[in-house]
Image 1: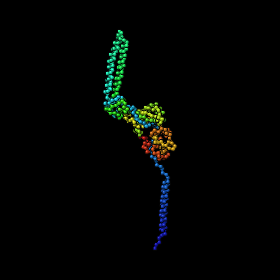
Image 2 (image 1 turned 180 degrees about the vertical axis):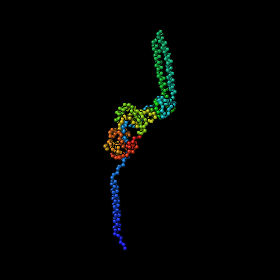
Image 3 (image 1 turned 120 degrees about the horizontal axis):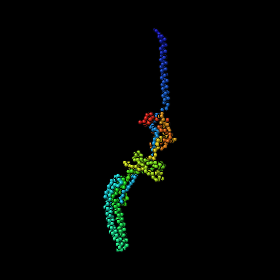
Image 4 (image 1 turned 90 degrees about the horizontal axis):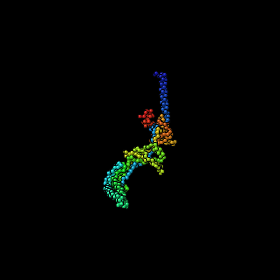
Length: 398
């Protein structure tokens, strides 16, 4: 029986030891790598995440001409209103207009039965002709009496009587002419014409009715709506500015619908009332509008906007950019690195959608106009309005 060589056994044991060492080394390296990975993950989880950019809308500070308006609640009134009444009694023979019709000054409105008044005129004319005939006879008698006096065939008393008769007839003819003029006037009243250009309203009487000069309701009302007037109020604190501006030239006034959105007409301020209402602290103003399209109607309620003055070349931003905080007014300014800075402001006039900046901002800077509620100083932002994104990237705005 042959025994194995001892050298062969030793080699086998050495190989096993080497393999065992390699296995242990590989396991240790794997355990170390896993530990390092876990440590890195824990460290990453412990670090605060970078804040995401806040989406905002921005606008640039621009040098603008800012109009200063005064807005007040106004009421539309016809420039002139006339209630047409009859000046004589009589029956209506003809109505020559329609309700709601535009009529011109001098247009026929209605005709009252003229026959009684024509008869009175004819009678007055006849009476004058009769008196004129008597005057001719009286003048002849006076001339004959004058000739008889020269020959002592008539007394001075007879001459005076004839002269008085002539004078009386002259006076009577003058009275007759006055009666003719009055009858002519009364006859003219039977034809009623429009006293002004305007729109008729509801008719109070119909054809065939008897009208009287004493009727209080009248026949029809005509309202002049071309042009038309708007009466509105302004605070008494603005009175001096309005008067100063009015002294420099006409002031424009715009009317808007009662919701303040739809423009209706453009006109001119014509009157500042001569006193301030002490109860309300306001002064009444009157503006006049051409109203060719009849966009204004008597009785309408409108917003009247008076242009008092215009600020030239002032720094202005949308009014939504101006925020109010514990320390006063401020705005968020977008810096070149797309973070924001809180900037205190001194604001002048705020007119609807624009605010005049007296200090705190420079022309060309960008301010946040929407998205303020998530901002704080230094926060990163992302501009969402397209035009300002081009500005941020350096592209020209198209």
